[in-house]
Image 1 (tube, one colour):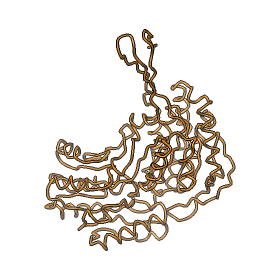
Image 2 (spheres, helix red, strand yellow):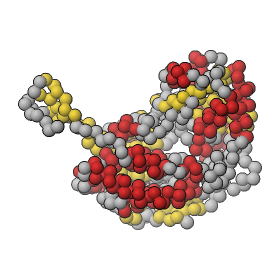
Image 3 (spheres, helix red, strand yellow):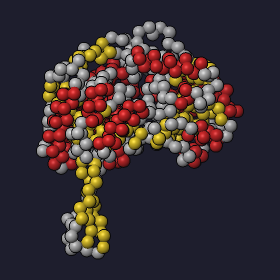
Image 4 (cartoon, one colour):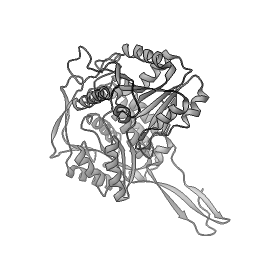
Length: 479
């Protein structure tokens, strides 16, 4: 049992009056750890610590290379713990262990080396100008979901720290344990007290963090419903906010593809990604009508070879869903699809022989229409729907006929054709014969899929305020 009773504030474990809960393995339905959930007073203490660290502490005033050195030292301390950390996260959320490996190292490597914005002199007229400088935004409330907590958490924490911000990290109650390990490594690496604080919390207490006047910015990844609430609160307070929300992504498969290889790529990097619990997952599979049956057969061939089972087994491709309520939700969508007239051609139930844990078979619908609930709403499980189209214009229309606009894919033998189709899709990330996602590439959505960007220089820029300093005539700024 991995246990942390209290909040991580000011580089130490602080007692809390909050409820102690079990963290349960989705694969076995048995407890694997215990943690305390924050109450409002814990949020107040964590924000106060972060506020003091930002307003009067050394971290924002250090040279950026000094901050990078602390971050690099934390990476060194975490490196020997990587196998145990991967196992811990797999036990928390049920995502296969091979998907966890490398998350920590790659995140530290990229974000630790992000170029810092330099002051820029802009001339107004000869002999007169102004300086444009970027300054850290302040105290960041980072709210992280359970589906990919390491990559998403470090994708907020690391650029914020490099920028000179301080952070209150709010993990999900399903996946809070590993964040204590990461925070403890930062403390051991010399991160000043109050710069990184960890407060696991439920939805109500999380809202207290969002509303807190001591927080300058919220960076949230999660559902669109929660994002609407957070965005409304931040709008009332004129508070900086980045929202990376849900998706209902479409993969357009053109008429010139090889069926077998395309089916494997579309499913393994799309619909089945992260057990299907991925906001970017391609769950609407758009196929040419005249190749519909051939491609469906290819999809079923791939699905028949997918290994569902123990997420700690490195050969497992699909593990359990994160919680019983999530399995119930996914099964409810499968029933909805059948009631609306779609047909299951693969899966649709619970895997044979997996009596413990919250498993669902990879499930594929045909006879689906884009107006159906299974094609409109984010299911967040390994469930996809095949939709036939007659020509390229119709495929683009169907792809864009969604409240969401997070991601998508185009699969074609002609990359230039793929690029042209991608330019017509209203979504933040479109992969051509690939996922199109990496630390260095900005990620975020159009429409109900969010505001702002994570990752890349664009995501880094979210953690800065821009200041103009007008200079008097004749003043020559230092270069």
